[in-house]
Image 1: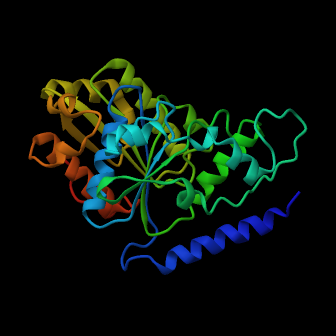
Image 2 (image 1 turned 90 degrees about the vertical axis):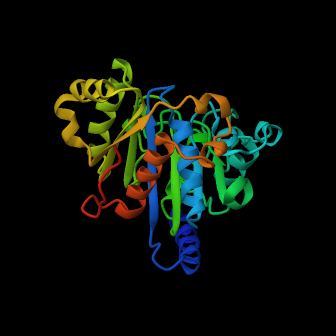
Image 3 (image 1 turned 135 degrees about the horizontal axis):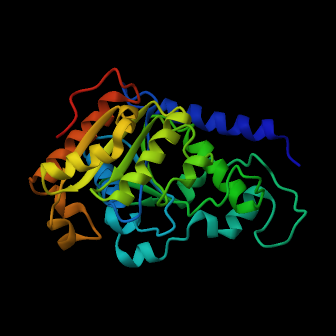
Length: 303
């Protein structure tokens, strides 16, 4: 088995090269994990934020960790190209190349536990419109739960590598629910967007996720209430959240917008116009940009 220190040194060297190309003032960049109940708009919000950051000149990497793999369509990659994307979890040749073991080959395999994956974005990152870069990972199943299968070993290494990349905005769209917060998937991310709509089940998911995010040491945790039709929707969510509201660094309210249905899955047409929904999303983007993971450096949240 290869010396893990050698692989870590290679990854650190790759990070140093990235620092050489960092824009002045960008620093470490932003690492934001986005989660919530299925169907509340996580992927749409991830794609729109990716384009808003790219518009402002940030090097932007959107990471799709949701098993539905809808983020390529949402950022505007043509359907025929999106359909050809193979998630890293299913790219068995790459898994074997990096870990030394092929998925499904049986038990007792010798794995590289810290594989060098510094080439992953160059080799498998997709180029989206507007300068948005995309990496489709697929799902990490039972990571940090004792599973040493080749796929999970690779994906955990990719997540560690992502956290070494500097001078980038990294937005990760995650599976529905909160299970990944109970694993290592969100470790190293300094901001979290917890997306809900004004329904009981969705609020329950973000209540649980807010506590887990804080337990993981994510410094800035934001509540994003999507599909608001009235002030009653906001009050309902706040009442259901109860004392859990104290866990959030800020709140953002996104009004219901019928034009989302008309343009989906490609969200780009929404950015061409002016609407309360897009205005609120721009306020959210500004909050993430100015906070940099530090809740003491914040403009007022969007309402």
